[in-house]
Image 1 (cartoon, rainbow, N blue to C red):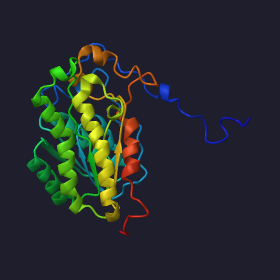
Image 2: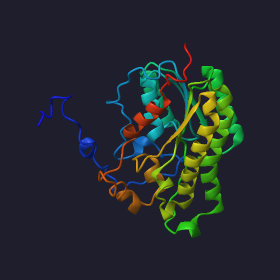
Image 3: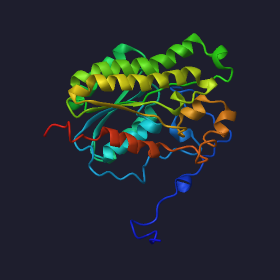
Length: 294
């Protein structure tokens, strides 16, 4: 048998790469409310602050990331910046503390960060975001539709109000539709659209019926749009994470759900945002088949 260290050294065990967060009693205010920020968490998520190393995969790219202030959005912004991209960060009004911290991480990587606090449930807000990105960076090379809203309802459909259903649909689906439609005229061959879906698209939880519905819709939208714009040289993909530890979890789930969050996964723990970010880098990288010469 060959020496286990002969071909590149020992491998990291993913079970031990991160520990299960201390989730007991963890609760945050609803998204957008005062105090619903990453520093309020007992165990802050790992966005790759001390571990992610860039390799120039996205040099000179201009990216827009929605939900870019915290969680997966922050990890993607950090990774993109360390790979050489300038980033426009859109996030919900009221999340400025997290937004400023993400901007600091981007700027510490030597890249430009443009902060856009907004509510993307309106078409005008989506148009203003695209216009701001083009004004500031000149174009859009990567669009990451990551912003999402969920609110667990243990009683299922009986407890989902029309107001909640409307907010979930508009945040998760309408905004993605509007932003793709508005951004595409500013995207050249070699550009990428990356949508964030979820394991909920395939395995819906009854208490997240509305959220799961949107995540399944994102998968189909991605497939259809990918076929539609492929001839323009624009690639469209989606990432479907499992349970990832972010401020959205203790802000939208009851305490008993938070306390067991992620424990039923094959690894026995919740995932960390940094573990997802590399998928977005891979999908956002320039394609040799489509990227024009600079």
